[in-house]
Length: 226
View 1 (tube, rainbow, N blue to C red):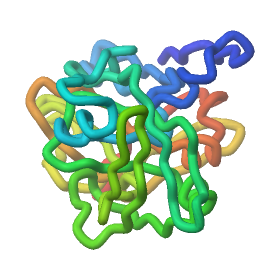
View 2: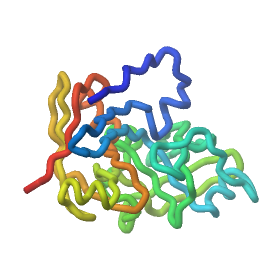
View 3: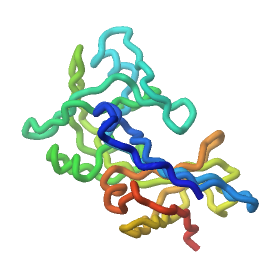
View 4: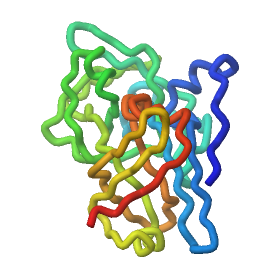
């Protein structure tokens, strides 16, 4: 078991803090028993855009620029950010865009972000945005008014078929995450998402991470619900 050293936020650019990955990563290294390596990643508020919305917000022909590669291969935090405007003109001035682009634009917030914006964002699995609230996205070249797409991402764990066999679970099953920290916490009902070439990774939002004091966690463990 190894835990990444705490990050000194005094030397981190504010833009990086706002991006999806805060680099608060806990690594549980597999031993002789072949236990998979487990990483817990904290996801800050962020936006996924369609190709069309990228061009509307940043100009014709514009494509996203990679700022930092994320833990899952092919995914990245982009240089681009947008202003997010909610009801009564409440706003977040700089929300990170993540790539690659998607078929539908989606905004992922923590609960406290929704309170700040005046948006009652439901807990949803990523991609399931029917009937969700909307918002306004403002970029340097244009504005996108979303009729729907604002969610609180359901806590989940990504894993490969190998990892799924190890834990005895399948896609769409549920697991729990035990966090051993000064604020010991068990997060139940993590959605299992299985895919090829996927690394074992739990995603928590900033509210969840702060509640369990993930910065000072000594150990993290996935628990099978059976």
